[in-house]
Image 1 (cartoon, rainbow, N blue to C red):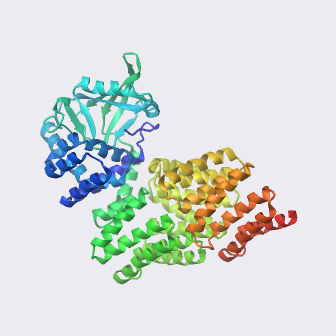
Image 2: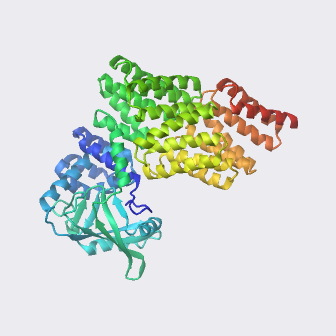
Image 3: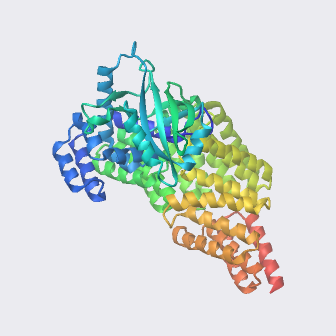
Length: 599
């Protein structure tokens, strides 16, 4: 079940699982796909050994419903769809398709969509109390089930499920009463009594992505733990999310379904699964353009993982192929230059990054319309590198060009628009204009909350940036609250050696330093330094930031010789990595002078 506080808004997972479904339905699934699923189940103990053996012997496309109800596959598949578990969704792609197609066939046989009579079905289940509170706020609004939805025409069977769930301490039992009009265009559904393992349950099974309008919610029989909730099948949807879905479908790029799938995995932040998939596809293809595509995708993954040298290697492999098979001014070459530039930017090699970004921009200005999204990307990238170099007015100028294109060409809830707002916020933050920075960061978070899964790394970055600006404004408790939201996502989704995790530790260390809790500050700053020493080049500005922050803590603790040692290391890196006029160099020099006077 998916619900939100905004009555006509659906959560982003609705969109991404829909796009997953579209791609998987377009794929051709062979016996190898079934074998991979069986191997997965054996490896992960997903079913009993007896059931795995039976599935292997008995499964065929027309037995999908029987297998769904008899082998406990429903819990595995629906968990994956509810939580956007890409690994299981892809592994079960063949089964999703067969199950959806079988429901569709039965629906066509059983229901006349022009003159069908409305009817009622029931579903009994438990809901966590926190989820039930959200549902209560949604009365009159839209609610979706991203998974396959089991219901029954037998109220007593469903009520038994609800009553059983109501005895659990942290749950309430819910009896959903679903009003179905077959004339409404919606997700297919069908009676599966003849196909199901449990024939006595009178089951009506809905395919994925059914949307309902929430009606009355009331207690049943004075039982505080048991409720009935009325739902009305609807063809209504979230118009803003529909617009974004159409756009993301266009952007999920690739000549094959597998390429589109790898691109979707990157968009939802599932980088490890994307890497695994691209490596397999790279080994299987002899086509040069496909190889170039997978090299670029793997470069993107390695960049996100902080493995910058490997990222450049992959990007250059892809670029080398593209230079052989494409004209010299092809926009795809500009994308390669932008990608390589982004890695150099992450490595702190700003002049190299700028050189690649300018190559990309030169091609795009010659070959693309003036409002093309790729031009916006180039303006954004150049703005980011000028921001890192401390040239804030230039940075702002490029980011505003980027924003102008994005506002004209993208849906108002598109993640790229959030990126534009975020990067303008970063510049204002660096310029000390904190209220302006906060305004842009809040716009960013508002969009990302509507457009991305709740554990996406970009959301973590957004929380981090809002924390930074509150930190700079001296509102330390607010800053700490946002930093902890950032860290919660990062610790769940990132390996322990990722530079992004170091940033989270670093910033929590900063706020504890400002709050006068020096031992906590030192602990977090040392965690950040440990990751950065392993993951970054020895002359990276972020390493200098860690040395500077630890030096600052030791200064406040009165340990001046230790403070001086760390500050001097920071200065040495910054003088090699940044332009001599960069504000950070001046700040560290001033800190060194202050410590020398005290010691």
